[in-house]
Length: 197
Image (cartoon, rainbow, N blue to C red; front, side):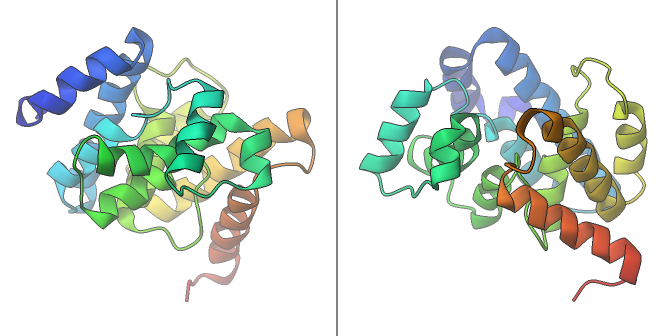
C-alpha cells in the first residue's frame, strides 16, 4: 500500500527519525489489518496510520510556536506536557503539509494519543494500532491488547486506556490529560452498563 503514497512516504523519510519512520510503517500496516478485520476503509486507515506521527519529531518549542502562529489551540496542560502536542499539530500538519482533507483521517490523528469519548471505528483503529504495532518492545499487557484489538474494538480501547492510565499515574499522579481520563471513564462505563448512547 505504501506505493500509493510515494510523495508522503518520501517526505516522512526526511522529516522523521529512522526509528519513528519504522514505527510509522508498523502503525500504518497494523491499522490496515484492523480495518480489514472490522470492515472499514483500508486505504483510509493506512493513510491515517502513515501520518499519525507526522509532527512527532518537531522540537517542543517549535511545535508550540507553529501551533500559536496557525491558530491551533493548546491547553495549559499540553504546553506543560508538550509530548502530547504532536497529535493535535499532526492533524494540522497532515492537512497543510500533506494535503489531507478527509475529516475522519484528521480526527483519527488528532485523538491517537489521548483517546476521546465516542471514538469512531477509524479513531479507535489508529489509537490501538499505535499501541500494538509489531515494533513495540514487549511490556506487561501488550499481548493481551494485541489479541483483544482483533476481537472487540471497544473492549480493546478500554483496556489500552486503563493500561495507559496505570502507566502514567506513578509518574503524574492525578495530573493526567483530561481527555484520557474522560475517555477511560466513558469506555469503562460501556462495559458496566452494556451500552453507549
